[in-house]
Structure formats: C-alpha cells, structure tokens
Length: 576
Ligand SMILES: Nc1ncnc2c1ncn2[C@@H]1O[C@H](COP(=O)(O)OP(=O)(O)OP(=O)(O)O)[C@@H](O)[C@H]1O
Image 1 (cartoon, protein in one colour):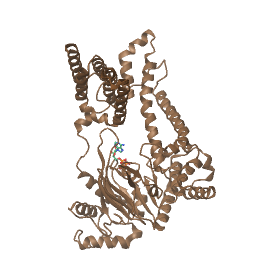
Image 2 (image 1 turned 180 degrees about the vertical axis):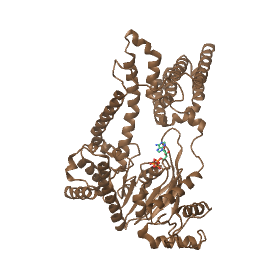
Image 3 (image 1 turned 180 degrees about the horizontal axis):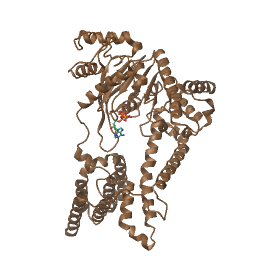
Image 4 (image 1 turned 60 degrees about the horizontal axis):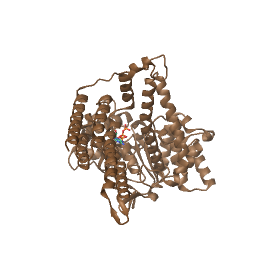
C-alpha cells in the first residue's frame, strides 16, 4: 500500500509577466488505493495542479507531501525537490507530443527508466511489459515517436509511465485521442493500479470513460479546489449499494425529498439528475458544509452523471470571484495594443535622449524618467530581473577594475565614472527595450516594416526579405528559450532531476543537446511550412496578411509622452 498525497495551503503563480495566482490555497488529501478525478472547466487549473504535484511548478506557498516525505525540502535558504518522492510517481502531461525528444520509442522508454538505474535485463522486461499493457507492438520500438499517430503517442506516454511502476499516477487527459480499445486498456491499468493499493489523480473531461472508475472527485475552479464529494460524486450501476447508501444519507438530512412514488413503469428510487444536482450545489455552497460519506449519487446512467457534475462545476465556477489582474492593465499589455511603428519611434526618441546625457546627475534624471515611463509595463520586465541584476553586478565589477589603482592602493572615481556613464546608459536603453519584445508580435513587426518601407521594393530594395529576416529572428529567440524550458520540464518530470526548475542538470546536458538541436530544426521546418502556406517566399505572389496596421489614439498618446520626456531630458542636458 502506498502513501497518501497531502496538499496544504498550496498557492502557485504564473511564470509570465502578470504573476497572477493560478492556484490559491489548495488543501487536498488524495488517498492511496483510490482513483481521484480532477474536474473543471477549461483553464480551471487542473493541469497546473498536476504539474505542481509533480514538482514542475514552483510553490508560492504551502506544502506537498507523499506520506511523511515532503516533495520540497529545505537546503539552507533554498528549496530543493526531494528525489525519493520524485521517484515514487509518474506524470503524463496533457499533450503527449510535448514529452518527446528521443529519436526512437526505445530511447524514450529508456529515458523514463534511467533514473531508476535498472539492469539491462530488467529494463527490457519492463519495456516489453509496458508496451503490452499499453497495447503497442514491439515493432514500434525503433520508430520515431513523432511519427506515431496521436493515439499511439498517448499509449506511449502510458507505457513510459508503466515501465517505471510508480506508486502514483498523475494523468492529464489520458483518454484524449484514444480509441475504444485504448480507453478499455487505460481503465484496466487504472483498476489494476488501484487493486495494488496504489493511487491515481486524473484530470479529465471524459466522464463517460472515467467516472465509473472514480472513488473521489475534486472540482477545480478558478484556481481553488473543492472536494465535491469524498467518494465518487457519481456512482454507476455497479456501485449501486454505495450509491443507494449516499442517497439515503442525503434523504436522512432532508436534503432530498423522501422516496418518490415509482416513476412510470419503473420502481427505481432515483430522483431526476437535475434535482440531485441542484441539491448538491446548494449543499456545497452552504458555509462549512462539505458532503461526507458517499457524497452524492445519481442514476446509473453515466450520461446523467455528466449532467450532475456539469451542474456542480458550473455552479461553483459561477460563484468564483475574478482574481486575475485588472482588465485595464491586461488591455495595456496586449501584444496588439500598440502599433509597432509607434513603439519603435518611442524607443528611438528615448534612446537618443538617454545617449545625450553626459554627467552622473543627468544620467540619474534620465533613469528617473525611464522608470516613470516603465511603471505601467513593469510586469513585462519581471522575467528579466536576473539579467538586469547580473548586468548591474557586471557594471560594479568593471567600475571597480577601472577605478582601482595599486600604487598607492586607492580608488580613482574619475576613472570609474566614464564606465558608469557608458554602461548605465546601455542599461537604461536595455530596460526600455525589454517590454517591446512582449508588446509586439513578430508578425506585426514584419507588417510594420512592410507597410512603412514597402515602396522601396519598387526600386529593387529587397524589403520583404529584410522584413522576413527580422520576423524570423524575433520569432526564433522565444522559440529557442521555450524549447529549452520544455527540455528542463522533461528533465524534472521524466528524468527526475532535482535542480532548480527551468534548468537542465549538468549531468543531463550531454544527452539533451543533440535532441534539443534536432527539435529546434523540426520547429524551424514547421515554421517555414506555415510561412510558405501564407505565401511568403513567393516573389510573384503577395503574401496573405489579413490585417493592416493603423496608428491609433493610444499610439499617439504613448508617442507624445515619450517625445515630451525626451525633450525634457535634452533641455536638462543643455542647461546643466
Ligand atoms: N505559465 C503560465 N503563465 C500564465 N498563465 C498560465 C500558465 N500556465 C497556465 N496558465 C493559466 O492557468 C490557467 C489554468 O491552466 P490549466 O492548464 O491548469 O487549466 P486546465 O484546467 O488544465 O484546462 P483544460 O481543461 O483546458 O486543460 C489558465 O488560465 C492558463 O491560461
């Protein structure tokens, strides 16, 4: 029998610019020997919850434990993942393809098994067993996972998990893309897993397939989780005694009307699903009330179960207050809010005035003006904090090296000052550029170049090629970093790495570099195909654009604010 998962006061925020809370004060107890379903609308936070349990997301607050062991352990002032806990569970992520990087199915399976340090024979036995359980032929072992069908890839994710024989299965949408046989196999695997005293947490929308299996259901909504029922929120025909028991419990509490006269031709004591759903929703909303025991029941038909669960989820979700950033702030940070031409003009104007500053006082004033202009966009700068800090340290070191004299030992400030001025100006210009990357998409940037300088093509200036090149560079930088983050995620989820999240451990670098380059080339190919489909690269045919940029009111306001600040800085520089 394995141990229970305990989540206490778990909060997680987004990695991105707005840092909004994705999970807020989640308290959950997943029991070993049970299958718990995570239900909720799209975007409710189910995947986030699973990834948090798997240690792929940093905890803002709270603790996660498997039995007596913590997922995160303190080492000095830092927290580190607990490898022992990592080895006890397996996670399959929502999109099967997001977890591939090896060139064959065999290598993928071996990669999952690597942290368990098994002997060759045992590893082979596990691979064969896992493939058979997932219903994949051994001939597929030498195939590239990317060339498998969607359903086969989903089966392979299951095989990768089963090969490791984990105590806990964390599954995100495991039935997506599976055929009927695949679903049957998955259910059989889950039932066997439970029978062995092990546990599973499954995020799903597929109630038809998985609700009949579930022991417990938790409803995720707006980043919080309510235990809809300690036992399955819905029981199927096979669990009728348990279901009847729960129904009786509700009746005993007068939450449901007493046994109704038998319905037409029937004799079944089931109330209408909608009736039960309404009662349950009311019960769940009652302060301090969480349904205990068997919780709630509905007719043996799973279709009815859907109605009930849908009603609960909708009801809870509708009562969640909106906790994201203010709409005005979100609006301002939208990548299509400003015309890229306005942003580039603003940048050039401000950069010129920063370059014109000559003294430390002038530079300080330029810094104040820059900071004031950046306040509304500050959340777009947070992700760069480490880079900024590293650059500031570099300035300090270079200043020290430039200013220090050894005969006699002293510090000559006049020598250090030019370094501060030059690198300080660069820092301010760099800060101004950081939000730009998020405020315009590569495609809009390309449009802006073509719209403004398209006329040059009439005199044979290759402006379209230049615009395309700029777009590709802009698009490729996030692609490189995004792909690296995916590899770091894999290193933690499948490689069981315990280094800081978003980093690949040194020991794994060698095995990751070639797949990384291969993956980038594959993405580049996909991108080239997409561009070609839009008509790029054909000189005789105009590409399809779909929109035309317009210099609007908000662009004008931004430009006026920047121009005013710039003139002010030039004036100060000439007066001082
Ligand atoms: N890295 C991130 N940065 C910002 N927001 C994020 C990030 N990851 C997830 N989110 C947001 O968190 C919310 C929850 O996402 P999650 O993928 O957990 O939902 P879900 O319940 O699994 O949805 P679905 O049923 O569609 O799979 C969504 O609003 C999503 O946009």
